[in-house]
Image (cartoon, rainbow, N blue to C red; front, side):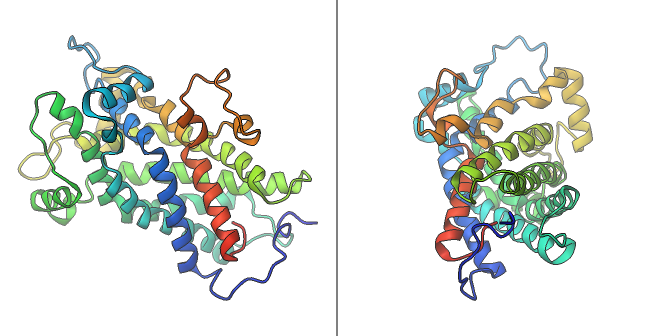
Length: 343
């Protein structure tokens, strides 16, 4: 049986394959994945700001690694602070994930088109991922800006600095008052660049890996195939997107002058150059481990329903609830339960 047909012999309700219905399903899946894995995202942000422009800094860096950072936040600020900024993060996915998933499928099926045998070439998947990710992230950029600034509030308080924002709504109104509508899109260039790279890796790799596995094995279109595909997409997405994510985080978190202009970096290129010059090339991969941990999947542990702590020195949460695995498994299952065709 052709890979594109396996698992699709069912009567599909008329609404099930509509753009808006799939949009809602993708938002539900993204909301679940974001909530479960959010502490890793906050840890990643703290790591990316750590040591900013201070290669020779004499001041002791409070946290040095992923586990130390996460434990330090929980110990010094409270465990719930690991979810600080979750509200704008989920709001972001209402726009971002809905747009990127819907746009990718629409581009795949109606613009680029499948091959006569039902396959979708890798180059088409790459183009679809780039466009879909860029579009979704540009629209959702204001919520990402609020999320990044809220994630850093705990550290600012510990450093004796005044709080910038009191909550999600206050952050939005403050940014709007200081920089206008344009200020809400502060850092959108590296943000879109990152999203384009991540989605090129995530959507294109997941789609291609899934079709390859279905076409070259006896596995059916189910959780094991979805898990294997998400493992492939997670590592590619993290490798491609981390440098742009570091630049994005630093630009969004930098202070601004009275005109709403950044005081540390004038552009994403300026941030990239200064980061490499002051901290070295590897600084562009700060936060890679939590990004990777959040996106990939400990394959053997999940398939056999065990936690192989001897394989990776990571926490149970990192092994059993990374973003990509949680999202794709949830998304595929809610599609199946609602009568929508598989991705």
